[in-house]
Image (cartoon, one colour):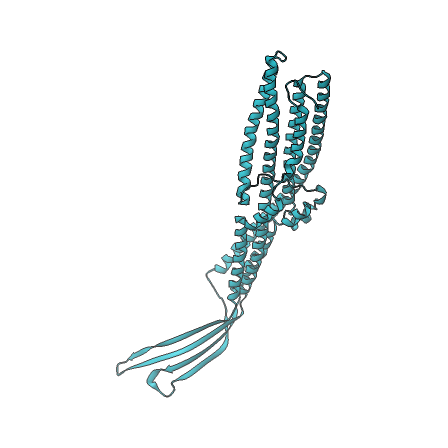
Length: 433
């Protein structure tokens, strides 16, 4: 173990820094990403609102179906009728009770309205799936950003301890005539730079903690474990096949099917309807108080309604529905192109990040080997404490860079899963086992 003239144990602090990076993602009392993800997906306001949309669409479908059910109504009628003629006048009372029953037999407009309402349940359910995907993406990105900020603060804190010791002991050695003023200034400059770095890291930690808290709607844990997923477990799908079943396009596909029923419903306004009509009436009294009262009347038959002209509302309704279909088709084609572009872009960035991680890993190894060599040469008297200190700074920077690329990898994995349509709790459980 190296003992420096300024009473600092450089090798000791290098071990502390190494352990801090290795242990930082797995500290005690760390929060489980999957547990919080499950809670967020269940309680996120956007997800809950999308769930209510599903409920509303089901109620709307039930409402549409109810229009095809039998319609039973009752009437109670009473009063006095007065007839006034030139030769005489006559007043008589009239009291009756009646029941009327109607049932649609053929009504294509109502039929297609029901089919469209049922299809919009699928649209709402697809939107719910996408709401869950979006909140998982936001959670994953903010989680990784918070992990990075916490790790930077940890390493910066260890760095400040080393730099403060180096700064104080450099001054002592300068006072003893062993170092120059340039060495003292270098120590002070490095220390101030680390203080500035700490301020920046603290701001990042505050922002990332606040963002994460807004998403999870609960106290943010002090320590979080960065989720790790293997690229080999996430095969890149064939773009065309992936797009056709992609969650992002499913709401548009479902809505297109619903609009098809809207077009048919509007066109059905030109078609005849067939309805069963029946009634029963019991009349207690009526004109001239004759022996015919009280009496009953019954009616049972079919009513055919043939539309002739409705002011062009059917034609305009069909045109509006067709334009909506065309709008959705254009948006669907555009969205498919965007998905393929994002899939290929995210795949490329993830592959490049793997190379960056390997480079950073080697950089860390070289920095550690260099520091070990500097320590040995310092013991032999061929290196100064400043040389050792600069090597220590390179090692710290390499560790900070490793945290950055690991955070980028976590975010890119989330974006990649999102772009290929596989970002859900089931996939995350499988990939993080």
